Image (cartoon, rainbow, N blue to C red; front, side, top):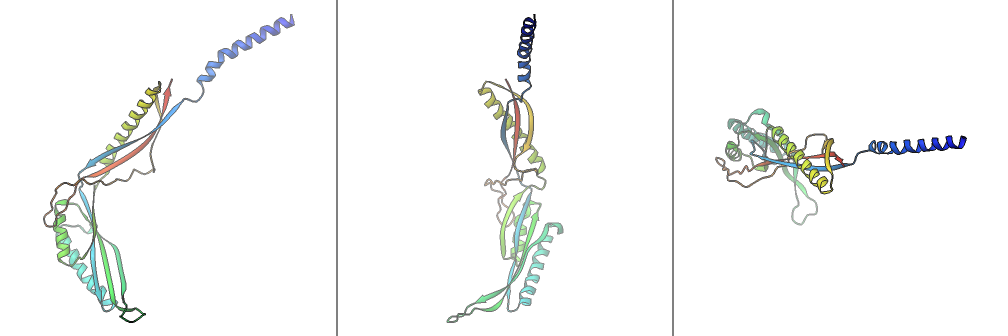
Length: 237
């Protein structure tokens, strides 16, 4: 009798485990796929940044600096007359260095004067005036031009479009891979902007288009904004 009861108990336990096994399997971690998508948007720039300044020489340090200050004051006045606001002009580099020379037949160099340099970063918000601003600056004493770059005064709208494109690209890639593997794409587990917690920095890209300014020829081209996102999807079997 006891043996019969024991056998019935073992059979009941085996049946319970067999029924519970699929349930336990269903409660396990779902399969996932991680994909990265990039989105790129181009827009016409509405902001230009110039790096220009004045370099002067003098027999003494004070003479070099005085000449530099006078020339730079004239340059700044002309740029402001051309429509550049005070907030868009900033000193980015100021230096005063001895001018060393080595006389022929001598092993010891000596100071023969001083060189003063003052470089400004200038933002131009009306791109049509870039040529005029450059022409005025160069005419009135600016003899150092380090370059020009183009951008967007408010990059967020273009960057948001790039983010949307990045998400669409990531989903399309995930659907393609999962479908090819015989599965079905499930819900989103997580979304992260790749590389940083801050919004991705704009990546300038230029296309050579003829956009001639008034005096000095300048080409604005287009500015490209790139965003990258990483998304984790569940896979439905």
